[in-house]
Each structure stands twice: as C-alpha cells, then as structure tokens.
Length: 141
Image (cartoon, rainbow, N blue to C red):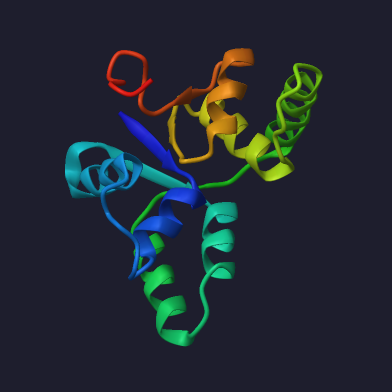
C-alpha cells in the first residue's frame, strides 16, 4: 500500500511529549519501517515546518522528509481539488483548500491517506478518496 501521511499525523509523531499510542502514528511508523511506501507533498512539509520552532526541529523535519518521494501537484490537481471541495461543501462537509488538494493527490496517485482529521472520512463518502484505516482493516467505529 502507498500512503500519504497528513500533517496531523506528522505533528503527533514529531512532538516529543506526544503519546505514540494513536493508531495513525503507529501506522506511519510501521509504514516507514517498510510495511508500506510513504510519499509526501510540499504542502505537508511546509505545514510541518510551520508547526515547530527552532533550528534543531527544523533540521530534523527536513531530514526526515528528504527520504520521502515528493509529489508535485499540477494544474489538473488544483482544478480537481476545487471541484472536490465544492462537492463536499454542497454536502455540508468542511474541507479546506489544502485538504482538498491532498485528497485530490491521493485520488490521482491511488494513495491511501493517513490522517487524524475526521473530515477526510466524511469527504471520502463523496469522492474516491481512501482513508486509513480502510473498512477492511478498521476495528474502530
């Protein structure tokens, strides 16, 4: 499985005081240890860097992300993200601009999104987005 790990999961994983018991964080850890392929995008890198301060944290984040393949959105991704956001908005689901683009990148590249943001699960009911855990592996309701 190929995964795109959302900023919400990276933020938990990179915090020194965070409990590592969140299933999304464990999935990211397992994936990075070889269970799956993890990719990222500049938006997730940027959001991760914005959430931490200090040169040591910055260098550590840049180093960790350097090992991941970086997806570059193109014009069609932006157009598709706007359509996805509008579809979700009409259904009463709040999806931000960046989240819509992440969802569109996942759909285009056949990726599964790992996130703690519950809005992605709601959005997935209105588009082809796959959010971890998939229904086949989910034990939580």
